[in-house]
Length: 210
Length: 113
Image 1 (tube, each protein chain N blue to C red):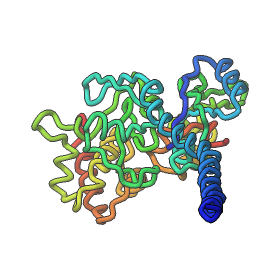
Image 2: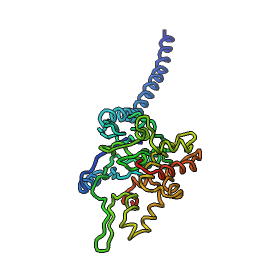
Image 3: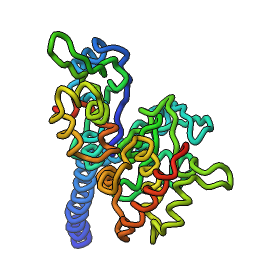
C-alpha cells in the first residue's frame, strides 16, 4: 500500500508539472495574442466598418447619363469607371500616371483617371471612350485610327483616342512635332506612333466639330 | 491605398483650421503627387482636405506684378495670354514638364510644394 501511495504521489507532481506547463503556455498565448488578434480584428472591423459607414455619396454624369455611387474616398476614378460603372473601355496600364491608358475627359479636359479620386469628381461631367461614338456611328477620331491602323494590341488605344480628341480640341495638332509633343502622355508599347500621328493629322485637317 | 477620411473645404479659413486641428491631415488639390504616393504607401494621411474648389485660380497683373493663384492649373497658366506675353519662359517651363493630362490636373501651389 505504501508502494501504491508512493507511486500515486510520484505521478501527482508529474501531472502537476504537466498541468502547470499547459496552463502557463495557454496564459502566455492569451497574453500575447490579444494585441495581434485585436489588430487583426481591428483591420477586419476597419474593412467592414469602412464599408458600413465611411462610404461617401457621389453624383456624376458619365457619357451623358447621371449616376449615383457610394464609394470609399480611396477609390480612384479609374476604379469607379471600371468596377462600379462597369465601363471597362478605360484601361489600367501603369496605375501611377505615366502611361496615359487611363485618359478620360472630365469637364472637357483630358486627365488621368488613375490619379483622380472618384469623390473629388462629384458633380462633374466625365466622358470615356464609350461615350465618343454616337450609337453605331463612330467618332471621326475612331474612324481615323482604324483607317490609319493606329493600334496593334489595342490596350493603349482608348487612352490614345481620348487624348487625341482633346489634343485637336486644344489646338495642339498643328504640326507633326506639335502632335508628338502633345501626345507624349500616351505610351504605346506596340509602337503604333507614326500611324497615330497620321490619324490625328487627318482629323485635324478635315476640320469640323470633333 | 489605406482608407482615409475626406472633407471638402468651403473656405480658405475653414481649410486652414481643419489642417491645423489634425496633424495627420493633408490638403489635396490636383493630387497628382499625393495620390501617387498614397497608392504606394509612402504617404498615409488619415484625412484629406479637398481645397480644389477654392477661389484661388486667378491670373492677373496689378501695377506691373503678375499674381498666379495657388490653384491655377499648370495647363491654364502655360496657355494664359498674359503669361505667354510677359513671362514666356514660365509657359515654356511648364510645358516641358509632366504630360498634357497631368498639367490639366496639377496646380501651381502643388507644383511648388
